[in-house]
Image 1 (cartoon, rainbow, N blue to C red):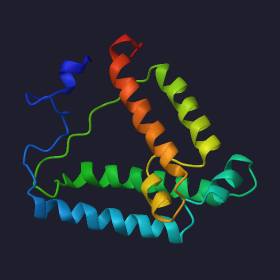
Image 2 (spheres, rainbow, N blue to C red):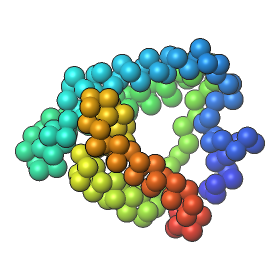
Image 3 (cartoon, helix red, strand yellow):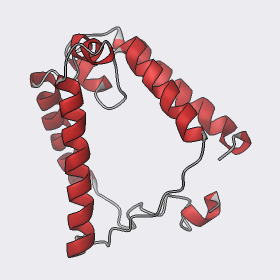
Length: 159
């Protein structure tokens, strides 16, 4: 499947909503994001020390969190498919089949090395910065730069 098959006419991904949110509608996402940030902080999911414990195989805590997230994801996808659940905008959810390629191995290794070195996964970067760990701004800028570089060279990569 080439990139054109994964795009709609607006140039957005196939799963992008066709309905546009107004400013008030986007507030719900801000509230959910703040809620998740608080949960991540209180559960110590964003803790550099917890992440280092995981990579040093000293604690099961983070593996339990990740395993729980995978289980919730599997159950959620099953329920979405079984009951034909719609988005908040009432649109059908289409889950596209994925194909494996070796670039996913390389990307996963790079991601894992970056996570182990920095103690920061892209998801909770803002929560880490919000707790006062301002050094994580370097990781955030690096993640943005890496995404930008990928955008520049993605057509030359084997995928």
